[in-house]
Length: 253
Image 1 (cartoon, rainbow, N blue to C red):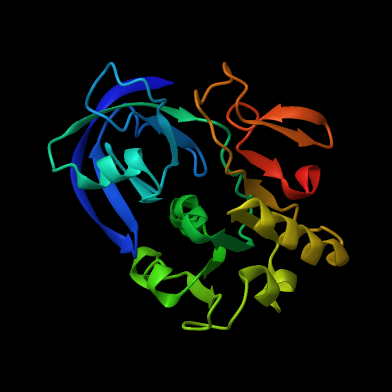
Image 2 (tube, rainbow, N blue to C red):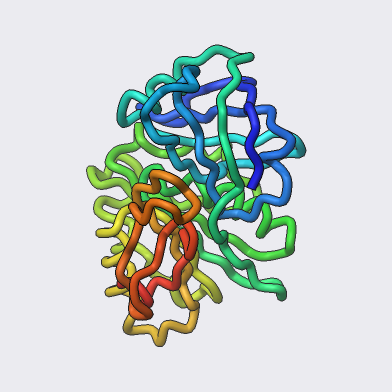
């Protein structure tokens, strides 16, 4: 784990109410696995009593990394409004990330809302390793979808919206169709109801993909000290930050 003042390079809109912020941070960009996260102090005051916030790595490029996040409160609002050159205290990389197959495979990536964030770096790593990738994103409306330009051009990008304004209407887990049979491995990140629906959908196909998920729990410390992100699994209580955030879908749901 590294501690560093990450310097904001730019912030731009990702979709309605969400942003992508790039940081210059050599130590925090080193040896990052797709699916890992970084803890960010969303305040310039070192004495701010609020905990750091956990963000999945969205992209990693040399000595730079990016976060993709929705504005949901004071901290994320503050982060989205900071100008280039602002130093932000952060520590990471943390947690266990996704494990990609060694041999070229068919990979299905499923993201719900801002849960799509860690899947983009996963897609870039997977394409570079010779895998075939389909990425599916579910969102409330077309205005809440990540643009196709954010994905590698080799990725087939499939969108589903709850109101039907882009792609089919409904939840992404109800539109896996032939992709679930095509995929050798499945990776997902999103809210718990999405994971439950995904588990219910996949149980009938033999679980052959060994689906890996990234749990979205509140992680006040990020390294197992506070026990604030404890979850129940088939193997007992586990800490999302330390034992995860990667888990086998069927160990939790």
